[in-house]
Length: 211
Image 1 (spheres, rainbow, N blue to C red):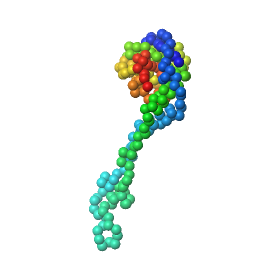
Image 2 (spheres, helix red, strand yellow):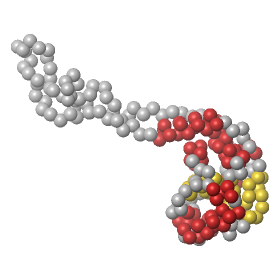
Image 3 (cartoon, rainbow, N blue to C red):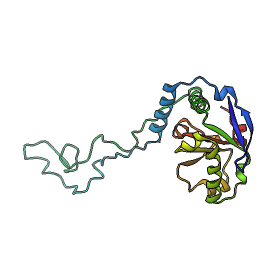
Image 4 (tube, one colour):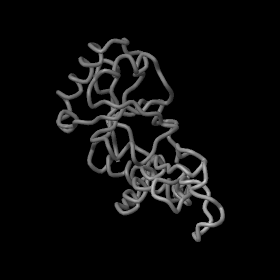
């Protein structure tokens, strides 16, 4: 499987052979869906919190006298058995249960989604992208030149730019362009990749990619 290498002037230099262990992996759609589901589940926060009797506003005076009424003994109206009282066993904001995904399955899911991009010819490589002028106009011109050479890229509404590390020039150039997301090769995950239509790897990021 090959991908085109471009320079910072959006000129094609050559074709690069992609690592078949990563980009020609057996695609498992169910595993990709499972990885996305677990990722989203673990991102959710447990917001539900119910007040217990010590947090409910109101008087702490006993409901009525301890003896002589013929009724059961009660403390305050904030007790759980009364309407408006505190919750006995309500949620406390710690009820979130994280789901675990083994490293082997996580790697397989990541290889699967990368192989989908490679199979669909939706990957290209940019050499020395960090040298781009840190201006949005420069990024627009660069992307426009690439789109004129690549019909698939031109039709893509979401493009992921994967760098080896954080570059201020890349962030400033592409940060304000709608549909372009800057990702780090060190923190790639199936969910972020699955949201993209096209991937641009920097040459350094592709070299560092190891799963």
